[in-house]
Length: 197
Image 1: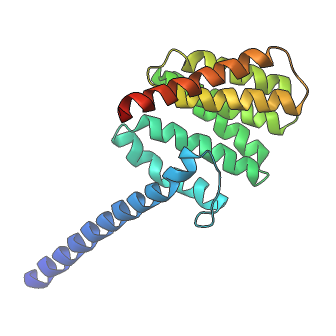
Image 2: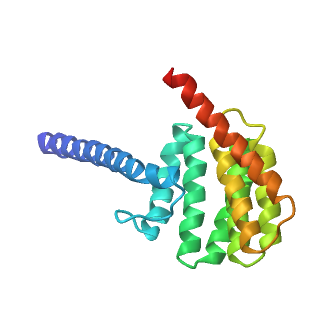
Image 3: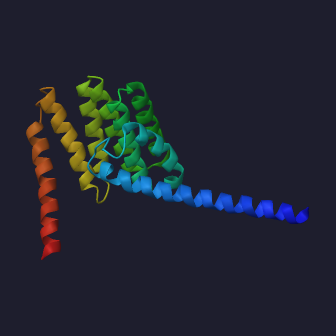
């Protein structure tokens, strides 16, 4: 009887270990599929549906927090807000953006706060309140400009500001926004030239 009990325990432990390894493998696979979407700020692809993004964010969040991959976590949350907007789930997108903002504030994490404000701006934009969207984007830009090595985020936020202004004919200071975007782009180009030489 004792022999069978030990065998059952050994099988149960082996199954638990294999399930844990499988989950880790699938989370790595999920992350590798999500990274191009995050990089190109796209809330869907032929391989990943918008519904999958929202589910995967819930599955990946504990692991990303445990490993302290906060940058990736907040980028994934921003992607989730965009996916919810794309699906027409505006109230869920607003809730997600607001909870994202609260989490970033609790953590005192400026990059997370800026990405949260970008997400909030996206929800304003899709609820036809462009002035509120622009203000949210501007606040995000102000915060991100103080974060080291965050030019790529600043360029994305500036692009949101410029496109929103163009779409809704809000042309105040648009030339300055375009010059700032050009300056960041030229800075990246010059850095690339330094690395190539």
